[in-house]
Length: 214
Image (cartoon, rainbow, N blue to C red; front, side, top):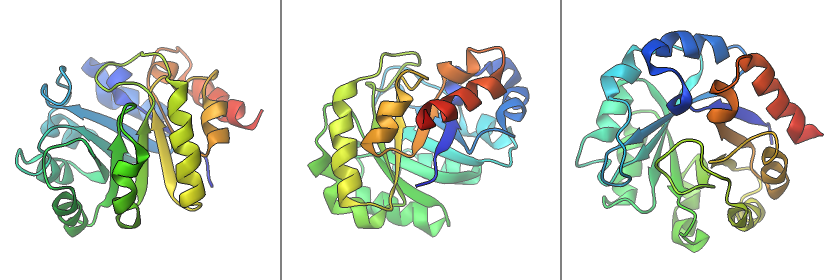
C-alpha cells in the first residue's frame, strides 16, 4: 500500500490558512480537515465557507466529528466546500448507510471512523461500502494528544480483513509513532503538530516518510 501523509490543518495558523496549505502542498498527499460541532466533541472548528475558500491541488480529506452529518447539513456543506473524501463516525447519531448514500451521490469518496474505545466489530458491516477507514489513535477533540498504542490491534485486524483498503490513522502521529502504525497496517497518516509546529514543514513531512521506511 502506498504511504500517504495527510497534514491536519487543525494545527495550522488559521490567520493565514491558505499560505499554510500552499507551504505543505508540494510534499503532502492529502489535506486533512477536522470538523467538530461542539456536541460530538466539545470544540468547534472550521466553517464550511472557510474550507471552501482554501484552494489546493490536494484532495480535501474531511473528517466529520459531528453528531448529525445529514440532519445538520454537514455532508451537503462540505461537499459544496470541495471535499474529496468525507469521513463520518460510527458513533454519530444519523443513519450511517443513508449518510454513505448521500456522500456517494455527490461523487465523493466515503469513509468511516471509530474512536479508541469503540470495537472494530461495530464497522465490519460497512467495510464493503467504504473507500477508507479512519482509526482514531487519540480521543477526538483536541490537537497535540498522546498516541494510544492499544488501537493498533484494530489496525492489524482490519488490514488482515481488507488487504487493499486505505487505512488512515489520526492522533499523536510523530516520527516516534508512525513506524509502529505503519507496521500494524496503516498507510495514511494524519499529522498536525508534528508538521505545523515545525519551522521546516518540508523536512517534517520527509522525516515522517523516512521514519516509516527506517
